[in-house]
Image (cartoon, rainbow, N blue to C red; front, side):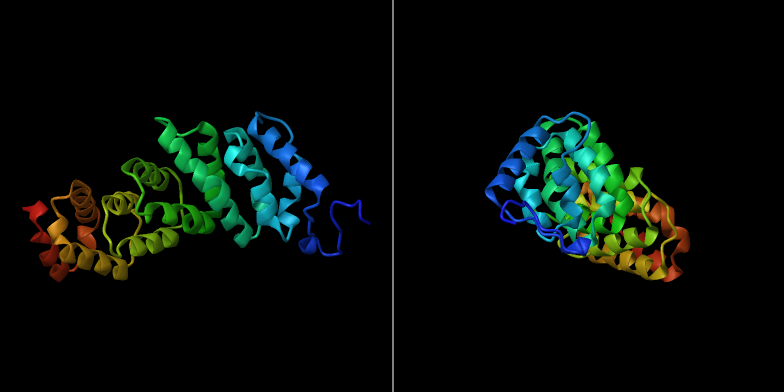
Length: 248
C-alpha cells in the first residue's frame, strides 16, 4: 500500500525501507533525538538497520556526525552483533572512526563513552583492525596524538596474536613513519611468541632502515625488538643487528 513506510518480504535480509517523505521526517527527528541522547531506549528505526538492504543510506540520513557520544555507545552495543562484516565495516567507517578522531583532537583524553565503544568494537577485531585501526595509522594525516592512542589500544586490549602479526607485517612496508614505529613497538611489547618468518622480516627491516636510527621512535622500537627477541635470533641475524648504531 502507498501509505506503508516499508515492505516486509519473507527473508529478513531482503527488507528495504523506501525513502518516502514520511520516513525522511522520521529520520530527521531521529537524528535530532540522537544528538541530545543521554540514556534510555534507542529509536526503533535504528534497531531495523541490520535488516536493511539500504543500510548505509538510512544510517547516513540519521546524521551519525551529530550523535552524542552516549548515542554512539548505546547504538554500537545494540546493533553491532547483528551486522554482517560489510555492514560492520561501513558502520565503523561512517560512525566510529570520525568520532574517534574528533574526540582525540577536541580533548586531552577521548570520551569515556568512545572508550567503551572501542572496547565493544574490539570484540570484532578483524573488522575493527581493517576498518578503523589500519586506515587511521596508515593515513598521511595521522597525528602523533592519534598514533599514541592507537598504540595504547594495542597495549591495553587483547587481540589474536595472528591478527597483530598481520598488522605488524603491513606496518613494515614503506613509507616508514614514527607512527608506525610507535604501533609496532606496542605490538612487540606484548611479548607474543613471534614466528621465525616475522623475525626475519624484522631483522631485514632494521638493517635496510638503519639510516633512521636517529629517529627516537625508530630507535625505541629497535631496542624493544632486540631486548625481547634477541634470544630467538640466529647468530647470523644477531651479527647483522648488533652493528646498528644504537647498540654501540
